[in-house]
Length: 118
Image (tube, rainbow, N blue to C red; front, side, top):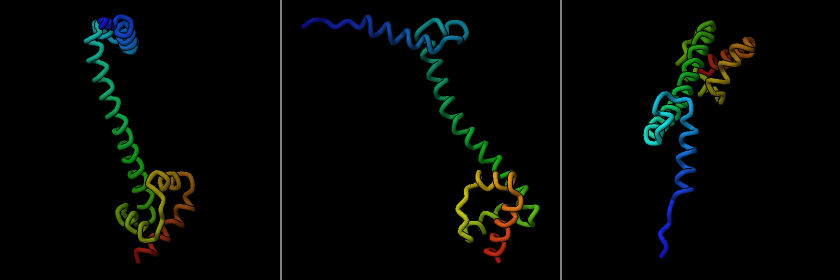
């Protein structure tokens, strides 16, 4: 059986990896092994930071909601509990957007929540 050589395929793979590492400093963009290590770490950080960004947005929505519901004399936790009891199936993002862009509509939601809590 003939021995299979990986010349073209291996060269293409290395070339593709080094192209992804373009712009990295020093050997991180020149040597295949260090470029691969750096890329693997970069991909790991990118994956984790996408989740961290979502966490950050959720924090912002909660802070906005807390500020908005305190104007209606309710705490955030009681508001969320009352919203579940009232059957309001809007998520925190939607509620915070309503609180910012439609204060009257948010006031109506707060009234429904207070009624559900009472």
